[in-house]
Length: 368
Length: 248
Image (cartoon, rainbow over all chains, first blue to last red; front, top):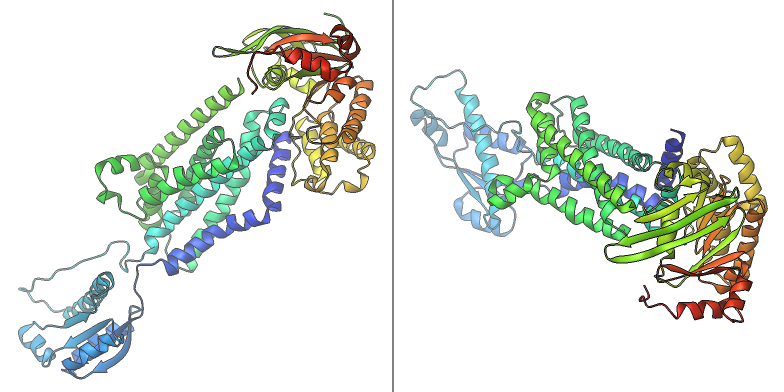
């Protein structure tokens, strides 16, 4: 036990004395959350909205106000006639023009049917599409409010509900992804590098000749990174809740429990890498290409797995991050309990055992 | 077995597939002796040393270290031996004091004992003022002396040195060897591999490995007589020339 404590102390000294690496380790999650949260977002905010209101009624004013009140649109001006539209777009003053035809209100109340025109600059098709969706949703909302309490038996309406994420926030997707990425990176890569460093510097042989048990060595190596990962997990969750307004709907204890399970998986992968790699550089490349890349590509957080060809879909099943990502989404965003994620958790546990057994056997063979 | 024989090796063999790295070597080392283990690159000396230190299992043969069998008593052997590799194996980002403390702790020394020995080492190496200095900023010669002192920190019966003085000049090597003599006088057996023939002259007895076998084993003076050589350099060359195995 004493050996163990002394070893863990030594590991912490290595980590704390290497200020630059420590800074990167603690900074990675923060930078990634900020980057994904504010820079790499596919949400569109504050687009320029120009209004052409030929009706100038109570209803059109109410709809326009509702649009302007949303985060997505900023009112940048009104125009009086259709001919002004083209120059407004060309001058870059509008992303979308909202056109109310004359007699809009009258038509709405007499025939229950009126048309609003949404004109967008589709030179950026994704942006145009997104804006139209936002605007339709807002108008739909307004219609909903108007109809409240009244029943119109023959009216067919389409209702779309975006479950769990009504605002279509990107954060719901990337926060679990960033968690998987950061934990994988820190645990697997840093543990393998720190074990391989002992090999590279010749310390490993001395330690193996000493009465120190290999188990103590490996266990002591992983403890600091386990703690560091929990710290990072906490900072990600704090940032998500307080900066990105992301709710944690499920149990926090469950969230931490499954995360620690995933950290174990990552640590066992790190151990496996350290068995294969002879230099820190090799360990880093194996971790980056073998672990980080699949986490980004095949966990479902950047690209939906459902759309992939069968071989890739099959391949994604052996990527631990995929299971963790799905667990986190269930617990954090859908608020589901353990009974909905036990299958995924069992898979992660199985993978961890598998990696540990392989590493252990390799470790012994290496000694022979 | 004689009372004061600490290493006893009989027909020790290591095969990697069809390749016989160590081919049935036998020798004995007495307590307090400085035993030089020489051989060209690829002659098998590192493999032999790895078997004696428990890093590698022999294919055949017998050996006892400090009276313990290398197959059955590996854990007991570990307490009785010290090891210093060619990479001197200290942590560069830890201080002199922290390195001593770490290795002492690994061998289970008590804090009290550790403190006494740390002071003794620092005094002996004239490093009293460098206790809080990072090892990275010490000159190579000092690192090697410190690494040796750390390897014998737990007072092992035998210390294995794998090319301990690589990369330093003969004067620094000489100073390192003064430390070795000091330990030998205290009864610690020294088992050392080296490339430097000036070091071979410092040993009590020298074995020279060629192609996995021990071709010569005697005192440096006797070897020179046997092979009609003026110095160890010539002894080594005359024996190593017979090697058929490629360098590597």
